[in-house]
Image 1 (tube, rainbow, N blue to C red):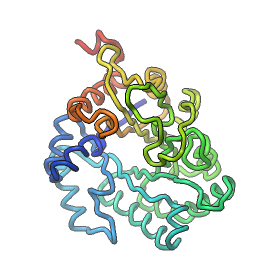
Image 2: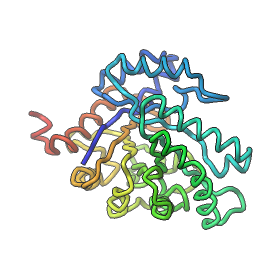
Image 3: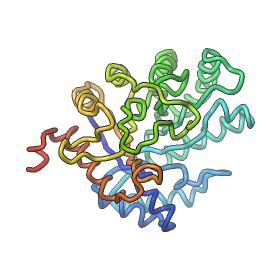
Image 4: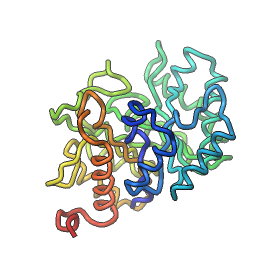
Length: 303
């Protein structure tokens, strides 16, 4: 079953980048799309070199003033490679601060990319190092009641694939380390102008999409899902780049509660720069709500 469907601030990033959009206007736009939960990218929280509690309090108040809450926080640290180029203690302290920020903002979900093995690491060594790293972090996550989601958007990776993350999460056996399925791993390249590479790793060739069965396997360990979408097919009431009807049926019929962050990424210059991000984001947000909470048919859409 579905819980909150939030709207990710990346949906309005075009305006943030081109118009220097202030925070109050950003949240106003997200609210007009019908969201109750907002998913915050790292930039909004300004965590470096250290979080500013006054800024975070004002940010939380601003979001609440629009009748919304923080659905999740999103940070960009790739743990193993960050440790390789920096200091392990600093990386650990940074992520502890991310956990504290998430709790301070009233959210229970923190999304982090598992990243890639550090140079010279085998896949197994990377998984073992990742587990040791998170064994130290999870007591902090438990203290703040913050669930960390391993955002997985590739088919083959010891850390950033659904299968790799499932191996780690099953071994750790903690409710505070989970799989966050990024729909990118299930994208079927449609040839509609969407680049056939991973945004976070453009040098890595895309694999064939993961199976719906793999998505279903993730659900037991996925209280939070990254609903990345690219376009809206009005006739079919769907994003045609995924086997989305089957995936959404699986979420709707799941015995577990799944919260979501909807992120429209079709606005970027290399995809559909001329499309209105607000219009398409709202179309996709409404589609997800129809299919997950109120039905799936065109007739239901038009009533």
